Image 1: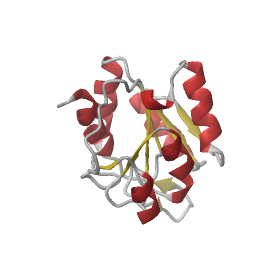
Image 2 (image 1 turned 90 degrees about the vertical axis):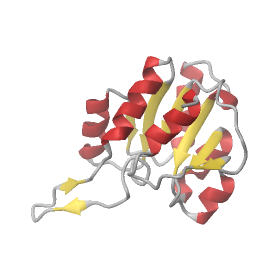
Image 3 (image 1 turned 30 degrees about the horizontal axis):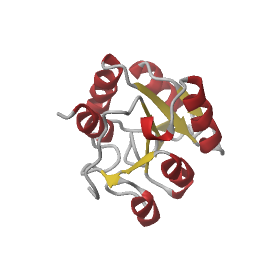
Length: 158
């Protein structure tokens, strides 16, 4: 962690999918069907946030249906196939009438930088060095190993 941050104002947690909710590994079978491995504790983290009035969304460049399938299971909105994550994040914030200090974005790679710089940026432990440099804090967990749960715990003060 860089600085002690107050999360009391956070009302929206937005995150990337690959490299945050996964370890950035993709499994491709002989038919070209992709699979990923996710950590169940992230589902509980998202549930904890939602139960406490904090929205959770995924904004991903990835177009594969596996992203939507996981988000559907967790009952969190998912915007996938996006090359302009910042515009989507701003629209989601506007829809909820939220300021930058009321929103955090959890990311791992350089295509997350604009979002992370616009709000309270959180980098996963194994993020690209530029992402870590731009982040307000870095998680102890690496991507795919309970990042959303760790963020939920930080926000809830657990």
